[in-house]
Length: 156
Image 1 (spheres, rainbow, N blue to C red):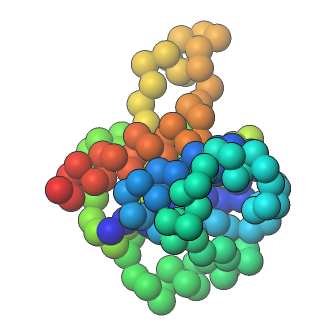
Image 2 (image 1 turned 90 degrees about the horizontal axis):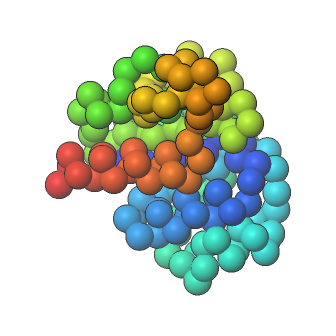
Image 3 (image 1 turned 30 degrees about the horizontal axis):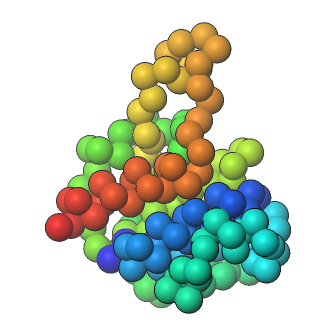
């Protein structure tokens, strides 16, 4: 199954909601440190409800540690970015994929973008590029949900 990776998430409820998605789908959740909060944060726990025991969680000390782990496991690294041009819907997802999402404030590091096998985006007809004053980006947990469920739909 694909794996969900969050690069240095900063907002506890977003990560809690992503953890709930992972619990509901059986996907592993990988977090790349440093986090902008403690895993004991009450807002994180509240967003994940009582599903935390169902989450297969793995933390990585930094980008290098994550990339080394990923090399050992294999699979494609698919970076989701508002700056990419390939819509996620054109991607043929594979079971070993790593679905990589960036920080809420500034996205993915250049190192991770360069390491990615593909850079995907969620098209937004009312984005700032398309409509002056439009929406900058989607919420992190919404983005994860959109991409995860498309990947699972494709994989059956």
